[in-house]
Image 1 (cartoon, rainbow, N blue to C red):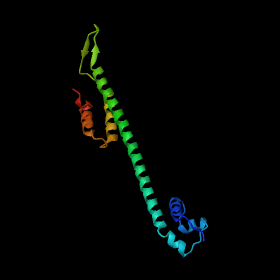
Image 2: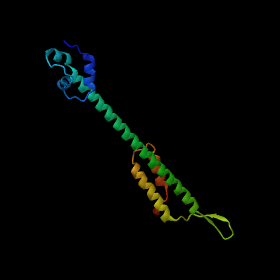
Image 3: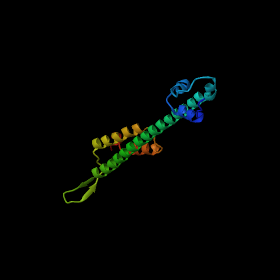
Image 4: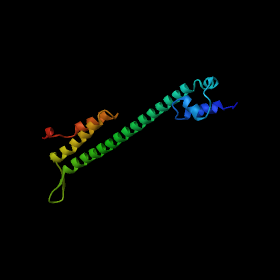
Length: 154
């Protein structure tokens, strides 16, 4: 009578791609009799449990990767919005400055509203993309709302 290392065979089956214990036992050349059935009882449930744990870990990893990707996109959009906001501030400052014939610098309240409107429109579009995804969204909305619009012409 041949002796088998049942613990080793159990580990091998649980980690294998075999769908049934009977198929695994047959591939190993072990006779499928009452003694064998007694030794392999519970293997199938252990394999199912291992497969469920594996599936749960896969789902967890996928969710983690997707969350990381979304977070990176939000950071990139926020960076673009911040750079655009800086450009609006610089453009507003520069548009309000003029030099007269004598080289004297003057500041005026005249702003090229068309160009400024394009910049603020782009900022508002970025704000819409961000939605409520960022914790400082209230501050960002307030900054954008404080920007001049066509209605503010004086």
